Length: 499
Length: 134
Image 1 (cartoon, rainbow over the protein chains, first blue to last red):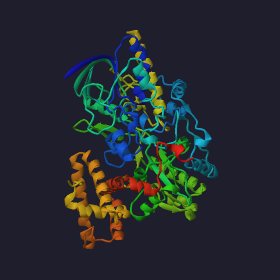
Image 2 (tube, rainbow over the protein chains, first blue to last red; image 1 turned 180 degrees about the vertical axis):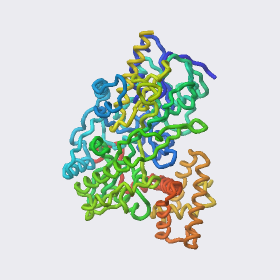
Image 3 (tube, chains in turn yellow, green; image 1 turned 60 degrees about the vertical axis):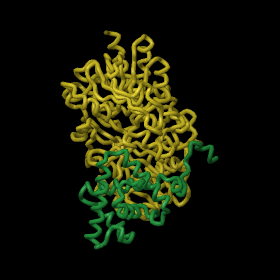
Image 4 (cartoon, rainbow over the protein chains, first blue to last red; image 1 turned 90 degrees about the horizontal axis):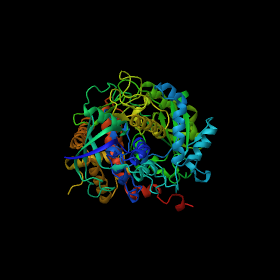
């Protein structure tokens, strides 16, 4: 086993880890050794082919097929230099004030989080798309929403040189999306921070990490690791966990640290989501342009958010309810489809948590509360109204039975779409917003970390990712992850200065 | 080499696959091979138990067809096959619903990722984005 020594080790190179790395450049400049360990590979620009079959196995954990323990929800999270920022759509929203207030985290105030978020809006080139770059799928959402009595808002996006490939979720083939893989991590490396990919942290102990470097598989995407394949023992004074909600909880649990707060793995939330599809009588420009330019926030009043979206053929097929001739007819209408993504604003409840199996792999337990089912039904009704108001001839609604609603029946949306039709295991549900597991709070009795991400009773150990969320965020989480990581970095730098 | 690690129950697998994607009924051997190779590659990345569970589930579907209709799954006409699988899709037992969902997802992955199929749907997304359209 090879031994290495660093002053600070960051585990994970996503939104949180990338932000931490960039913030610790002054340490590196002062001669301290800062290391980022990332489980996934460092992709090359030409790796991003836009083909589902190539990209999903390379970019996502379990090839995008990571399921909850009972198999009723698919969890999508990216692995690689940049983490899930490689595969998100770059939608950049500041956390709602009401959510931060409800979190009730000591010393965490909304104005501070908003100011930190604003810094990253600037760094990552967040702006509104010009109107002439918005495709018809998105425009239909806006006009349909207005006619149905809703107000759609435009997503600020972190793009530079977007060509409108529509392939954001498979990794931008044009290097336009300004995730941490394009901004913070390269800046950190230029500043002396070392990033090592294909590095799985097996266990964590006080002042030491066990790391396995894996070789690049034959024909695989990305570069070889920066270190030779093999087992490593990395000694360090400070560890920052940023492996994402699932990765961080699993690492903490399998490391078996004595006296760890009992809430590790608890408080998992996911914004359960599904895709709604509507068929128009004429072609809809849907497979070019940024896929997610608008949203409708009903989180506070009705517990859901609608977002425009456009997915690829396999993901679309998987998300439609059912199979056979009706399913095939909807797929054959692909050039005439409009799509909306429905997200429920779930709440942290007992039982929804992350554990590990005997081999130390994460197991995510998630049950759909009645409130979530009602939110999904309310969201589906709202989306169906928007589709029909935009001119759709039929709507595919997973919470209707049968799931296809014709335009002539749009007056009966309230009767046709209901939470009772939600059937776990049959209704395709997925999540890309994985939150909680190492939540911030007041003490080891109610949380895992304090308001600056320090694990209770472990001054050398911090968390800087979406694990910190004590409850769901109700919006796309990456900007808040960055803002919290920025705050964790402040705490670490202050502690190091004091010591 | 056989691309699909389910040789012994291939007729049942193909009967179910056609019920999920009727366009596979008249598909060429080349399309079937591509679909099965894609599924085999996905299964190869999973624990071996997944393939065993899949094989067991397919046998269970075939047995159900024989008990209910007196014919194998492959012996049922398309509509009867779809109806039978729909019953399982709405089963009160989560494990059975998951089985159908998992099987259909594999078939969709095998079929809707093939380039000729994607092109046939009219899906044209490319890195060139707007410049290829305007």
